Amino acid sequence: MLNISRNWDIKIIGITDRKYLGENIEKGVELALKGGIKAIQYREKEMDDRYKYKKALVLRELCDNYGAILIVNDRPDIAILSHSHGVHLGQSDLPVDKVRGIFQGLIGVSVGNKKEAEEAEVKGADYLGLGAFYHSNTKQDIAEVEDKVVKEIKKSVKIPVIAIGGINISNVRAVMKKGVDGIALSEGLFTGDIFVNASRLVDLVNKYVSH
Image (cartoon, rainbow, N blue to C red):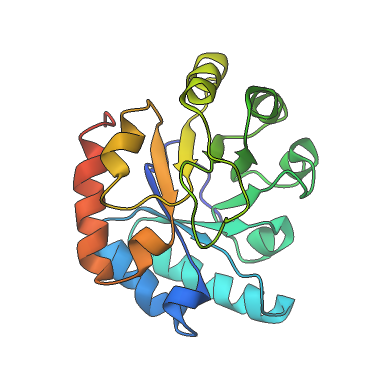
């Protein structure tokens, strides 16, 4: 059963992408977990629901083994059925308050401005995914977030603000200096040496986020 907690470590959220990980997603995820990543977001846009459910079960068990959490992208139903720890919702997904009514775990919401951020918090979100900070292969058509927007959102909400979009080892310091509470990334973690990437990202982010 799902262990409800509000002290989960979401300073770094690794987002899966079969473009980088291939079919054996869990192999890359385990390397990230061994490197110290404590939150994985399972993002799958191509496969059918049965596949997503089965893969979520495998990844959730893997995360449990490393004291980490699994967040399912877009799909509260799969998060619930797989006993995953969280779900991440976009602006076009199911309403946050409706999902909160059926799901007790962690809920993250993608936002791009102060209004969306405040609304998500009021309706029950536990953290915000703010982006894009840089253009990426995953999100190529999204405008980059201005520094003033980051400051406005940080002043207006109490829940963590997680930066997303084109983040990697070379720019993570600049991102954290903007005052965000953590980062979410895919290519910047899951290409090259995943274990080394994870270890370096953990060291870098921990310098800016209090424990």
